[in-house]
Amino acid sequence: MPVLRSGTWLTKARRRWRRHRRHARQAGQRPARTETTMSSMGGFHDLAAATRSRGDRVAAGGHMHHTATVCVRGGGVTRTTAYIRPASSFAARLGSAPTRRPVRGAPDYMCPAAPGTRTGEPMSRGEDVDEQGRDAAGRRLLGDLIADSHLMSMEEISGVVIERAAAAGFPEVLIYLGDLQRRVLRLVTGYGFSGEGYEGELQVEGTVPGRCYQYGKIIAAAPDWAEWWVPLMNGTERLGVLRITSTYADERACQDAVWLSDLVALLIVTKRDVSDAMARLTRSEPLNIAAEMQWHLMPPSTYTDRRVMIAASMEPAYQISGDAYDYATDGPQVHLSIFDAMGHDLAAGLTAHLAMGACRNARRQGADLAANTEAVEAALIEQYDRSRYATGILASLDTRDGAMRWVNRGHPPPVLIRGGRWHTHLHCPPAAPMGTGLDLKTTVCREQLEPGDRVVFYTDGITEARGSDGTEFGLERFTDFLIRHHADDLPVAETLRRLIYAVLQHHGGRLQDDATVLLCEWLGPATAGRYEEAVRLAGLPERTGFDPHGPEADLRRSTPS
Image (cartoon, rainbow, N blue to C red):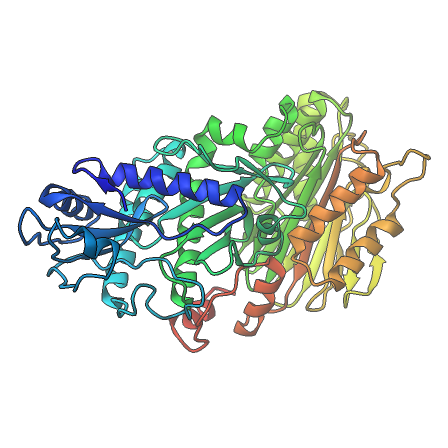
C-alpha cells in the first residue's frame, strides 16, 4: 500500500487508478479495488479540503501520527473511512486489520462492489448506505450543473460533468455522441478532460454501446461492476450514449444515471448550435454548402409525444442538394412537409431552402394547405422567374380524430401502412410543381387514419436508387423493408437508419440523388393509455420504479390534446 504525501495524494491516486485500470483491461482482467494511505494529518487535511469542495463537511480529529484510508475509483473519492491508527503500526497495516473508530463528519461514499455483492446492499464492509447523503449529493449535482450551464460552453461540458458527477457517486462519466450518419460514436473532450487513455471512436454496428444507441436500452458495461451504457436523448432524438460508473449497484443508482443522462442531453442541446468543435466531432467528412444549410434548417430527425411519432432520415448526409423535410405541432394539428427541388447542385439547395422558409411563413400566418403551396410558388417565381421549381407534399393531421388532409405538388404519393402488414399508396390528383406557374388546380385530399397507422413520405432518390446491375431499389422493396422491420419491434428511428443503410448498400455506398424519408405514425387520441406505446416506438430507456398513479402520471395526463 503506497504512502502518498500531503498535497498531491488525490491527483496521484487518480493517475494510479487510471493506469491500473488501463493495464487490467488490456490484459483482459477485472480492475482490483485500490486503496491509498495518506501520511500524517497534512494528508487528512487535504482530504477535508477535497471533500469540502464537493459540498461535504469533514471534522479532522486526532493527532499527527494518525492516518486515514480512502478508496479511489475513476478519479473521484468513492468511499472515505477515517480511523485512528498509529503510523508506526505497519504490522497492522500489512497483517490484521486495525480497530476502526469512525471520525465524526467523515464523508460517506461507498467503495465499488466486490464480486458476488447483492445489488441494493452496501458495497464496502457491510456498512449501511446513507440514503440522506445520496439525496443531498443528487440535489447538489442537479443544482450545480444547472447553475454552471448559464456560463458554460460546449467545450466545457465533459470536464464539468465529470467533476460534478464524481461528488454525487458517479466517479466516471464519458460522453459519446453519434455522427451525422449515425454509424459511429465519438468521445466528447474539452477543457478539463483530454480523453487520454479512452477510446475516441466506437462503432454503432456490432458493439455494446452501439446496441444501447440503437435500441435505447440501458446495458451493463462490465460484469460485477456498477457501470452502464445509458442512452443520451434529446426528447426522442438520439444524441449518443453515456458510459457511467457508479459507486452503487442498485436500482436507484441506475435510475439516477438515466436522469443524469437526461440532464447532460439538455446541456448539449443548448450549446451545440454555437460550437464548431461539436460540428466537427459529429462529421466524418466535410459537408457541402447545401448540406450545411439544410441540416441547420430542418427540425430534429425524431419527435414523439402521446399522439404522434415522427422520424426522418436523409442521404447522402454530407452531399445533400435539393431535399428537405419539416414538421411542427400546432395544438391538436401536426403539420408535415417534404420537398424535392430541381437539380443536384447548390442552386437546388437554395431552392429547397426558400421553399421551406416560405412554407413556414405562410403556415404560421394561418394559411391553409392550398394557400400555403401557392405562397411557396409565388416566392419561387419571384426569385427565379420560373427557372427553378420544387415538388412536394404538404399535410396536416388532426390528432383528435386521425383525419389527415394533404396536397400533392408533383411529388411521389405517400404510402400508408396499416396493422404492420397491409399497405397502400394514397392517391390525390397532383398539381404542378411549385415554381412553374402552370396554374393547375390544387386539390386538398382527405384520408381517415386508424390508431397505429403509419404514413410514409419519401423522395424519388429512395425508390430510384440503382444497384451495380442497373436494378432500382423500387417502391415494393421499400415498403417491404418498412413492414418487415416494423414486425421486429424496432424503434422507428432505428428502422429508418437501417433503411437508409440498405439503400446505400444497394447503390454501392454512394447515391446519385438525394434520398429522404419522413414517417409519421398516429398513435390515437391523446390519452394516458398511449404513453407506453410512445415509449416503445421512440426507444426510450425504461424508467425503473415508475408509479402509474404518481406525479409523473398526473403530469402525462395534463399534456394538452
